[in-house]
Image 1 (cartoon, helix red, strand yellow):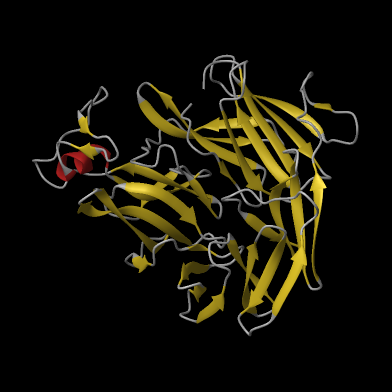
Image 2 (cartoon, helix red, strand yellow):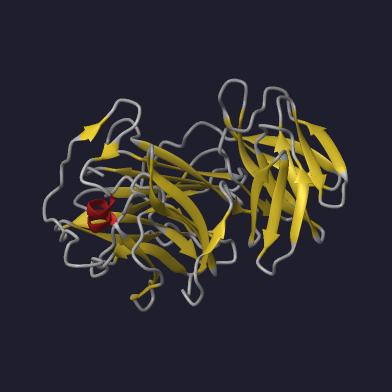
Length: 368
């Protein structure tokens, strides 16, 4: 298996990842409620430059993947059957010595959609050097971070928004733009203000505390910016309303945490003073926050079993990768998902996804 970020479906009990067999990468999809894994080995995918980021994502019921790009001309290098090794200069900055054309020939990829039901693969972009994919909550649009050429310090990067159908050209976005929470609107920070733009062209500008983590949510029919600081949260609405609330003592929101809306509340992962993992639920009206804490990681011991203390079922899922298996735990009372990849020893890779309840997914046995 490739150690790339897993793609969690926002509504269905599905998680997708990438695996390699016979030197070709392909997607797999696990249904962690039914304890099944589907291998799509006839679909060849690549990672471009997103191997440690997100080369796979859900857009509605389709997967967004990267497929091999066609060489631009006869001078571009052909695909290699073995790893390519080049010298690089440093320290501080690393440059790809052969140049951009050579790199594009080796790593350029087209964005494509994949329908798991029909196994239909549809490319929707020209070849690009892709670093990140971020689908819109509605599933019909995608933010793509791709190379915009070379600069003095190496590759230049740009963000663009495209339809997953590929019918329209990619629309440039401001640096740092991302999707609002559960909304097909983009948001970015500029001059101590968060700029919000929806797909119809409406725009808003909302103040934010300098250097504070922030999230854009919808409050009624207008956007609002939630921002965190040392001891509390602030909410600024587009109409000028400002609210503030404290966090439970010792609670902090980790850098880079992403949240979601559920029943009018903003849910996001948090940590306690002793490092305990929890979920922060923020009511927007009235504006207040409360934390709920997870118990220690569940230690699976039997197939399709329940744990003591109210946790939900734990299911072992054969993967088809030798003796490797996924172990999934579901806890109703907790509001943050967690997964781990391991091989019979300490966890190799961890990550989280927001959700209405906690999911714990472990890969064990074999060698991921």
